[in-house]
Length: 137
Image 1 (spheres, rainbow, N blue to C red):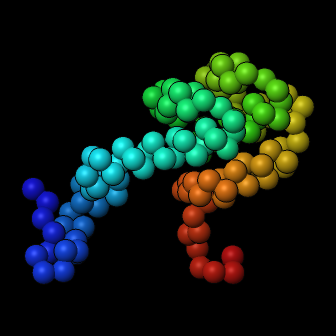
Image 2 (image 1 turned 90 degrees about the horizontal axis):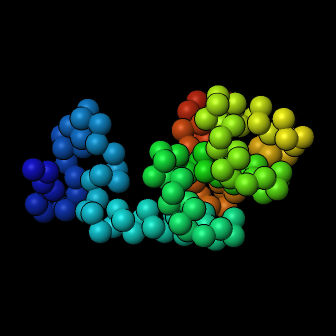
């Protein structure tokens, strides 16, 4: 059982270190109610941003796609006017998002800008968008 420090109500360093070692993420530490709200809030934000039903975003999440991939998929879908299932079929055949964009006649730099803008507007962080090196790189 995970306990908080009695007086401060903060996680102790030992507990946090053991959680990191065991691979427990920040969302798993939160209670189930707030975890669901966070997820629902993100789903709603992505759905509203791309003018899609939330069910579409939930379906993509249930298929194992992360929010970053969903954003890429929806940006390419909007730019190319192609339905998401068509893009998914090609992606599952092994075609990457950049190659798929080029095959659809889209400017990959423009697609990347749109994806970055959407992620920024939605405040979606990915591993690649988080700075890892020293400032100024």
